[in-house]
Image 1 (spheres, one colour):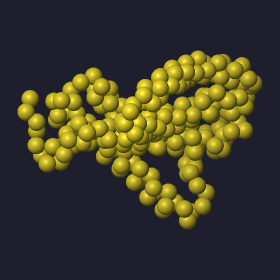
Image 2 (cartoon, helix red, strand yellow):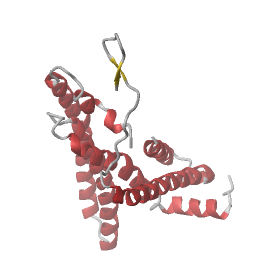
Image 3 (cartoon, one colour):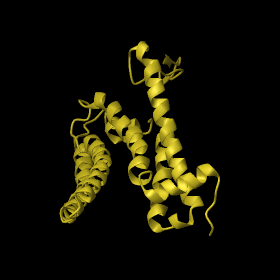
Image 4 (tube, helix red, strand yellow):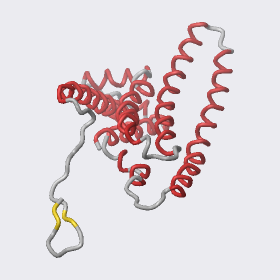
Length: 218
């Protein structure tokens, strides 16, 4: 920064972009990993969108919402650095006390994250009770595998959000924000297609038709 003559302020003439790692030797490895994750996420979600558009059987409300999720995932991973400009990071720039702001953010976090978590846990308790009534051992394994995958993504999504918004004294945890941002903006969008769509037999059939260049009759 340079100080302008006769002015009570400074003019910013340059800035520095900070990476995820400080070791230059690790930069190629980090680049390859993130490039692979990006290509996998974009390719998987765009494939799901193509399958939903091509296959008339998938023109149902469930796949409509899965298509919206794919669009959001592509946008989320295409935009890693929106997360670090959020309220907890802005609090660090304040010259006055942010205790009241942090308390308000903590309360809103309980309201907005706690209620969905309670509903999700309650729903999966009922799902687990229903699965346990399945007589087939193979059927129970398949059901628990699907539920476990869903809960993994839900846990990553809500876990990163709770860590970011429902903590007091955000300055102390600022060094962990990069890792939390990676989980929330890279890992979740990459896993969503694999868990919610690509394991579905109807989606797999539609993808085969897309790859073979065939269109199902309307």
